[in-house]
Length: 394
Image (cartoon, rainbow, N blue to C red; front, side, top):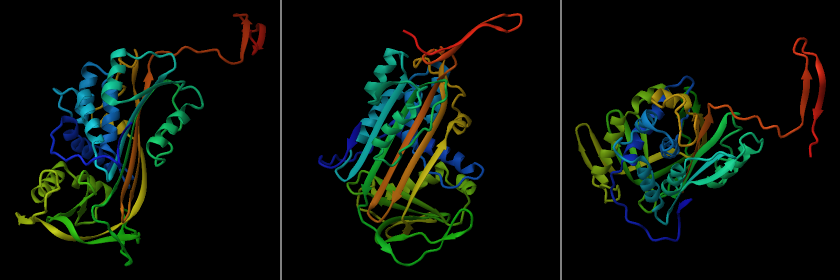
């Protein structure tokens, strides 16, 4: 596990361009858009980082066109070494500041008795810092083993990732991500009731908080966006508020890569390459950034969970993506993610866990390891010549 928390010297933030990091916004926006466009969509909160690391571990076990398709799905430069990109990203994100806690953890379980490709094992250990273990996925306790690990790595924010395993499961790959940081400038409670119009059109009055100064705010004809730094300068929150009341499907259409790019370019123009420079207001072309905006927003908690398998297949993940370095006949069967988010006056806590189940198309041997019935039959009549139940063997 890589931890970035109190007690270490602040590491200066430098602007970087890395294939995996650069791709995460495009992959995340595409995934978010598809989830919002689904029938009966409501709140959606995903971790592109967690999904990218988990799927990169899976892609590392793939070969040929399947590997190329997974790399393309994640938006990673096909000429780059995806494992190396993952290693650099994991190491870089561990270099946080004393005011922010960011923890990334990876684990891979393989069916007891299954031997993974040694080169793949080395990549998991060296590039992904993954913990490796064996697990009997047919045991009723198998899910509890994974869930205890996820619960611990997410500081008890995600106590359950899986309810059980399909009988064909022979492997499970997991990333757990935990984030906690304090606002650079704290909010204050807002006593006034604010009417919040929900997706359904109903009105709610959630608890609110406010900041009356030093909010970096982008104003455009279609939306307002706020940049909210956390202490230490390593991380920020970005809030984008459309001027119209939008449905989930409308938001799927609205939140495009161009809107994201426009927003981030505007903030960089005002606050520098790493968003830590003294803010400089600017305006032009029907948009501009103010350095002294004010903000009233809800404080809230939410949990989100989603089986991403069908959505990722629609985005280009091969159905039954083969993972020969995991085992002969192995393939991705499901990808699930759970997330947690809490935003209040002092800061933000977020957690995510992404699990990739690996199944096998090969027949698994039936292990006779419990009492069984045994018969000798007459084939012509199916009548048992001998019939018994056996449960005690020496």
